[in-house]
Length: 145
Image (tube, rainbow, N blue to C red; front, side, top):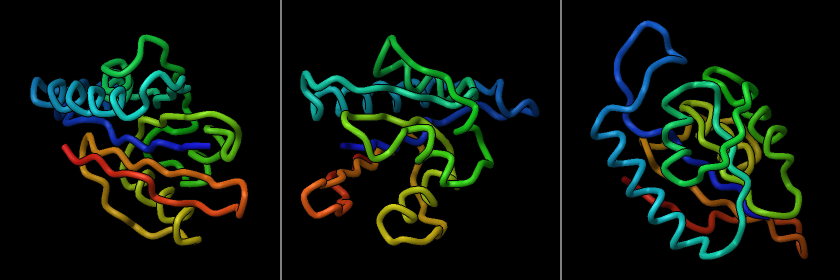
């Protein structure tokens, strides 16, 4: 299975964290990342999950019209919540659109076995692959904005 961790694109400032939308620059970042991801995935189907934050949903919508909204990947949750929300590892491809520092911590938990504050830039994508044959997890690709 593939787990694609995508940090939301650049967002507006504001007091209500979940209500902050993308800036015009963020909208362009999301579009460019979505084009890359669509090209990389080809016709392979993917389940897309975004947090309840508007900026994450807008980022995900640049890629797919079918976005699940899941509060388990909201800002400031534990990294393990991302893995649970994705039902990882399982069959298929899952795209999680979420937030720092949790995305970086989830990547480090899966790749290094411990939660470390790895930095993932806004609108960056980290593509992880689970090889069932030897139960290994590999970093397949990284897309930077």
